[in-house]
Image 1 (tube, helix red, strand yellow):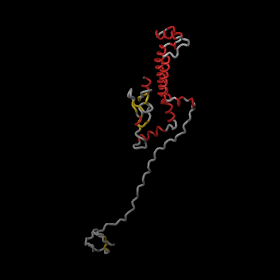
Image 2 (cartoon, helix red, strand yellow):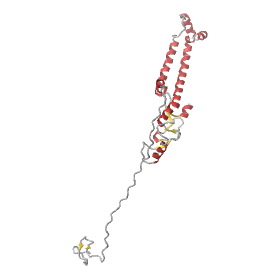
Image 3 (cartoon, rainbow, N blue to C red):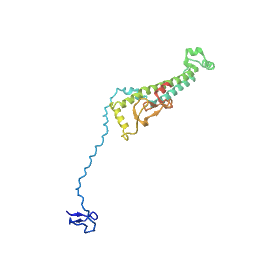
Image 4 (tube, rainbow, N blue to C red):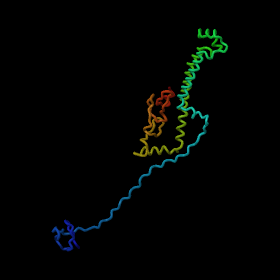
Length: 247
């Protein structure tokens, strides 16, 4: 059996040779047994984890609408400020016209009109025809402005409680109830597909993105966009429903 020199790798054909004929390196007394190399098996790669399938979106149910007479589409929160300004301007205009005597009693002579304006308060004349007295129109200006403001504030409150909540329900009704578990899986998985970290709302206990959390400017409580909203007619503030109803 030929020998292999461990120094230069030369194969010596003489099995009895004691030294290498090429480099002179002495052969060991016993050659190690040569083992043929065995093929290395590659470990099978584990299949990639598949993301949880999202529940299919159901077609949204169409609710009965009033068409042209649907006040939720004609009078919305965006137009409420304009409606209030127009109504207040109309109240001021009518009051000024009444104070100027444009609604005086028909058939009143100039002498009677001058006497009424001089005394300013004519109880008998006000009882017979209130629209002819300037005092009546001054009271109409004050009381009418206050009542008109209260009416607009009441309408804004009703729109927030009913109109705003109804629109949120229409958006959420398209998915099955399994969406809550789907949100929990993505919230627990680090680096999952999503816009940001998912947290639980302190008020309604829904799983929402962390950037949707807000703070009430009155009581300081935190909540999501459905719990803390911009409320107010002229000056809007982030307010929860409890503080808005209390004010």
